[in-house]
Length: 122
Image (cartoon, rainbow, N blue to C red):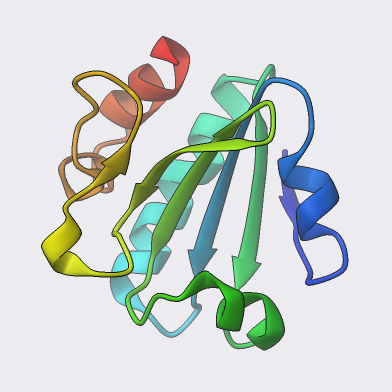
């Protein structure tokens, strides 16, 4: 199950115990739509992880805090701490990740099995 997120629910959602994945996307973005299908499949395959998403056109206040001009954006939190973010707000900074050997998001965003395996490995 994917929980739709708003500016009012985002903070509480990411501070859940365990692993939390958040996808920022748009219905008018081809890569976003392709990844959303994969994100949804992973949510169904790994029910022990919390999955949330925010449509950027609808959640403009939330997106403003995201500091990213690129979508889709994947954020991964563990016990409220951001452990993975791709793409990053500044391309020169590289992938933000505290996950050893984390793959780049672009390497996973079109591969359902690989993305689900990545989520399970966390």
